[in-house]
Image 1 (tube, rainbow, N blue to C red):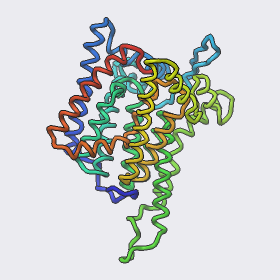
Image 2 (spheres, one colour):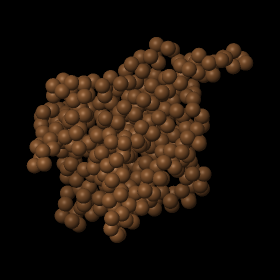
Image 3 (cartoon, rainbow, N blue to C red):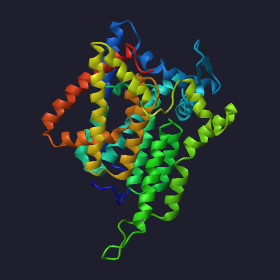
Length: 394
């Protein structure tokens, strides 16, 4: 399928046997990344496991799981870092798993991340297989696995969990399972603020479906698509925003600052949506000296590549929900005033942008595509080990 409509679904999601090459390849790439990280960290007298489970945001999620909300850090410059900025689904799962097993909260976060990353890979395969076929689906998963910041997929962060929920919600939309799509969008909205992108994708697809359903009949008397029951579609639309809206409203009530209280929490972290002004200033500052100007050129090229990939997605007539989702994820990542170092991992859930690359690889002979992906996987594993042993993700 290469148009903007959805199509009738097969009775079940892609079988494990059909997805096996993608999942085995994904596991191999992630194993390489973890092995490289372990060796690199050992050489620097650091613990790779600590880097994956007990630094940066992973600590905040663990603290929410263990103690609940209400913890904050006041910095000398007046900023207030509150754990209310972190959405609750991941710490809920950490708490549940820690209560049911001997695992610590940090261990539980790592286990959730590993399982969620496999679920995300399967979901990406399902979407790409549905849109472009099995070979492209395998390549899409492997391209996602070898992203430069792919090591985050194995960290006790929420990116893998969110990507899994988003991918399967999009697959449910593409196959007309509206209640499932809405439920998964609800859960994605409880995982990260960018869950709004999944909600928007569900709503856009539902509205487009409604418009087509009311459109002129084909010569054979049928409508342009097989009708989904209106009640289920409406229920999916109703469910989709409840997760994000529910948490944001709860934060507003908890802080006493009303419906927009969550924005104040984010402002305490110097996060917000400024249309890309902070990012533009960051890039412009790179051109004040040399060799930092080279980094500035690299950043501009990187943004240009993202825009080009999105344009290619449109030209290849990706389904509407994928375009809406990828566009919003990319816009929020690039136009937020958050710390620049977090932008690469914030872009990681935008997997539909990778489908043009997956299609290009799928057209190559298997040995050639294997060499390309293998080379990039080695480079990605080395960069991930270097990154986490250095500044790492914020």
